[in-house]
Length: 168
Image (cartoon, rainbow, N blue to C red; front, side):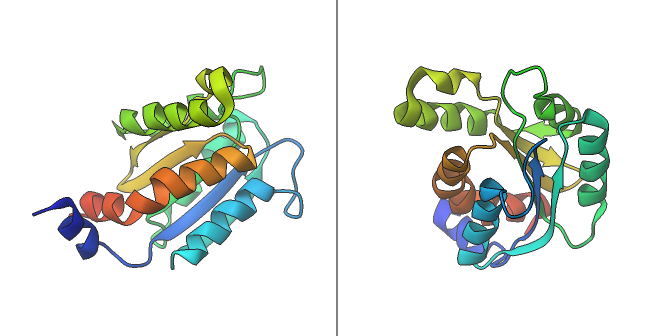
């Protein structure tokens, strides 16, 4: 079966949970989370959960446990906390959840980011993979990084990733 046939067989509407990790953003100032939700909706996907959580490992872990346990969620998209600043702890928490890592996601994201912002792209620890039968993706918190990842990587492959994971 060709890649296009695989993609065509996938679910048409993916049920997503969006998590923003930030010490400073609220719903009205969370441009990255709003961008993710808007782009998902534009492709016919559902946002079945949305939450902003402080960059505290225990809080991130608790919210990921909740999202991954939900029967109404196929994919979890996290943004924020992927850099190297002292408070950036998202990567460490997400990494503990990943069962099958999609190393190519982070590699290609950093390459695309490099083309956009230059050498600062090396500081991104964007990651993706599977966790508890769901797709788990972790992105930087900037609106530009979120839009880049959503438009170039996630939206073109989300249906395909979920269908592969669910064996459909």
